[in-house]
Image (cartoon, rainbow, N blue to C red):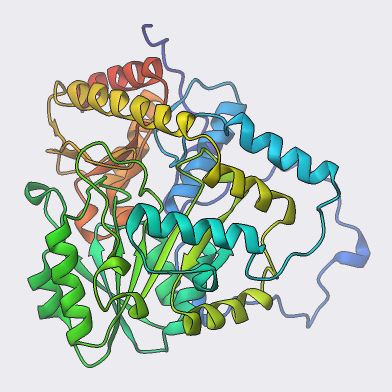
Length: 428
């Protein structure tokens, strides 16, 4: 379908530097006297720990896209990292059954026993991680990463992570008072991290290595030999590895390899995974951490003082997701592969763009030959072409000159969106 004539984006929803919210209408009602700030009152100030932590670029962009769509603007969005499928019916029905049965109260903080057992069995069967239910904490994935930073990092510690990498790793590290140390990866190497660069970056302050395979934003899958080499470095230097494996089931070529399955690595690895991407359950906020019993106790300590436990009636549904039929999951992966291949072919036909063929996840990370900054490029693309992609700079210094495109969209949307991008790039 040909793109309609693109209307100008209203000033109040244009993305501005710092991603400021839309202006408040001037004709608001008068503020009641009792809530006015009185002379001498001091406004609340944010804690210093937040000064070096920007808001999530991906979430901010998603919010802006939603606002523009609500105004009737035809946006093709490739910005959000979530499947466009619905949660499989058997999982939804299991959740409904829990509600109907009155399973709506607190659960054990670490999760219901049936779910912890199911997760441990899956981790061993699929990834050869030598764990039992005692090694599992049921928690939202992002919360697991945040708690891992708070539990195992002290102010001044250094954390090694690939560049580019998911936006929230750096934020969690900085909120714990630690320092991110980026290891550059290259387009020509399919963004696979080089173990020798990890070794060269280790100092007496290094405490942790963060890995994410398959990767957000590049879709790269770390090979088995590289996993083994990084594990050897971690053992020799007494480092913890935080392994984010949320996309473990979305692999098109090759095989997923878990760090915790490498000999002598289980006790020093925190493995994060969950249901969001695999079963189209992003809104359920349900995942897990797998680690040594000692580490799980520390994480659970934080959980009891934060969210207490995951939502009760979602947990039996998670058991159904893991133990129930997997056909819909397999169909989703097949569909993602078709979309990946389509998007790669279309992007490689656009002047000024080039892209790798990722082996996992549902992202492409195209590079462009213009000298313009990625934030500027993506803002112009949204305003002029009405296509939303995420600036590569949101994912680290090496992301400059790239943008992230999520192909978790229909084939029609992929064709339409990339047709608009082609026109935009030709006129850039």
